[in-house]
Every structure is written in C-alpha cells, then in structure tokens.
Length: 315
Image (cartoon, rainbow, N blue to C red; front, side, top):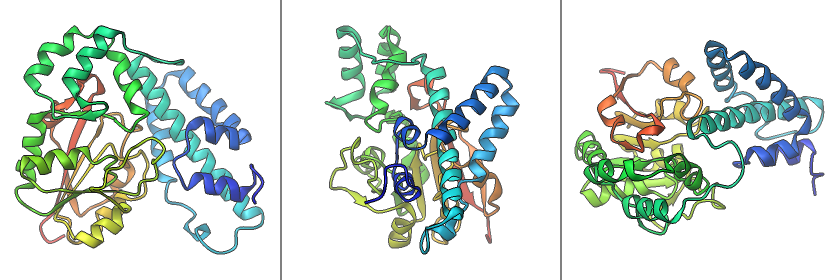
C-alpha cells in the first residue's frame, strides 16, 4: 500500500476528481505555495493578471503524458506529480473563488427557508433533485419571489448540478441538431440528453462516472469517457454542458472526423468551464457565441453562455 502522501498515492488521487480540501490535505506544501501566490494575485485585483494565470493553468493541463505508464520511481516523477498537484489546486481554488464571488457564499452550510425551498422545488425540479425543463414564463414570474437566490447553486452544485435548462433552450438546441446523430459527453446524470430525447431529438448521454460519490448515474448514461464515446458512436453533433475548466478531452473532440458541430454550454467566466486555450488554438472549427441561447440557461445570475463550433468547409 502506498504511503498517504507518497508521489504514487497523490498521483492516484489526481486521476479522480478530488475536492480542493482533499487535495490540499494530500499536498500541503503545494497548497501553501498556491495559496500564497493566489493571495497576492487577488489582493492586487488585477483582472488581466488573473486572466494570464487562467491561461497558464489551461496550457499546463496536457503535460507529462510520458508518466501515464511505465516507471514512476525517482525524483522526476515526484516533481511531475508536484507540478500537477499545483496546477489542479490552482484550478480548483480559482473555481472556488469565482463561485463564491458569484454567489456571495464564502463558507459554512447554506439552507433555503421553507418558502424559498417550496418555490425552487416547484419551479425547477420534477421531484427530489431531478430537474425538469423549466418554463421560461413561469421562471420570470416566480424567480423574483425568491429572497435567497444566491443560495441555490451552492446547494445543488455538490450533486453535480451546475445550471438549469429552459424549455425554450431545449427547443433551440433541437433545432441546431436538426435530426443529426448526437451525443452528450461529460453528461453527469444525463439531464440535457434526456430532455432533448424527450423533445424528439435522440441524444446519447455518456460520462466516465468518476463523480459517482456525488452524482447518481441512471442506466441511460453510458459509462464511457468522451473520446471513447465519440469514436464508438461517430456522432455528427457533440454537446457538453459545463465542461471542466482546463480539461484534456475537448482538444480531442476537434480532431474527431465525424464531428461537424460541437455545442458548449458553460460559464462566461473562463476559469469556471471549458479549455479556452484549446478553443483558441484549434483551426478546424469556427466558433460563435450564441447570446440568445445563453439567455435561456438558468438562472441568469450564472452569466452562462452557449458556444457553437462549426467545422469549416474542407477542414
């Protein structure tokens, strides 16, 4: 068995989806360095400096593939794991900072009171934490009544819920797919794919199910990583809602020949979702932000966006 803080043990931890707290406990020296660096950056309140840090964090995401197999002993591997830990800690801390800034929740538990909980449940959920396509008309009537709006996302994010989908968004996405073969990758509990399928546009949901401690994966969510799912199904359209920041799989999506359209739903804050370094580096697709669709992602306080990547002719 590996020692709790050995390079191999920390490497295994990094292969999953550790929380900031768990990773900081396993990598105390790296966390101390990251915390000191970010404290200085946030104290200066320089938006451009934060953007540069985000870009740097994203560019490091794909390094070190030579360590994925083979010899893992020695100083070189230990230094690599330390670098990867600092990178992941930086990303998780940036995400937490952006999220707490957006919601106003800094620490401690959050709870809805009875009235706010009742309104939110009726408006957003079918039962329990199973989401439903939200009527935009009903949302506009009821959302202003909630006095604890900023508590909603902190309460549901721990269960893998990062946004809510309006009926109008589902209809618009179905029109974009236009009957073509489609899959959703990193789909979580498969809510978006399920809504589209129920709307009459079949979409296969897939996820590597690494968040099994937080997300209940139904049987219709295929247990598969993004690229394996694309290679198996050869879809013309790929969707991803709230792709992890600095992820490694999106660069591979642009290289899959079957994919003609890639639709991303995410935050307009670049260190919350997506791999923007890869978005800007790829040359095979034109990218368009569809602000009319972003306005249909709920709640509006998320400042969500929808980006459509369309393969260029001859690419």
